Image 1: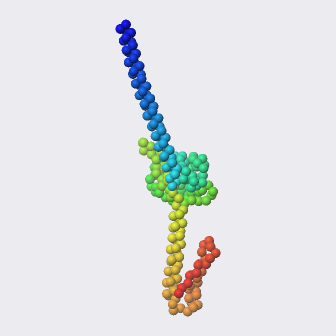
Image 2: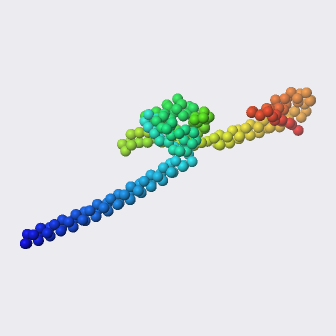
Image 3: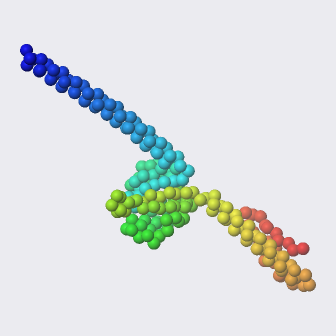
Length: 217
């Protein structure tokens, strides 16, 4: 009888221990599920930020091939993702040989090149896009270079502003020349003045059928 009671007590103890273990496992499973859900949400937030950032972003492997590209860059260039992934980045750049040389040199560990530089990218429709690129090499835990991360910023508006400024400055210089020559020509006869001012009287604006007239008081 005593042996049976001992067996019964031992069985109850074992069942109690098993129930406790099961509860711990269930708690761990719930915690694991919560961690997976948090990770999924974090990854989703990262993908949204990655895709919706206002600048292009891509990653290259050690062969200079694109292994990741965000939605912004795809929209900037007009390509579907499957046409960019796996392709060498210089395939999409006007300065292809320069780009290939710089990319492979950086992957080889050459630090003599600038991180930030301008390039001209090809759009799918054949037009070009001026961009500002910033490269950063990717290293593994051992410090070995395993690729390059790049941001790609559209600088079309900046280029337009710079061109407009250049034209305005050039026009100002022309007016200053006319003004200076006008002061010198004050005592000249009409025929001499005509020959002197001939280069400034009519300047055809590029791309327009208009004449910009320079006059001197």
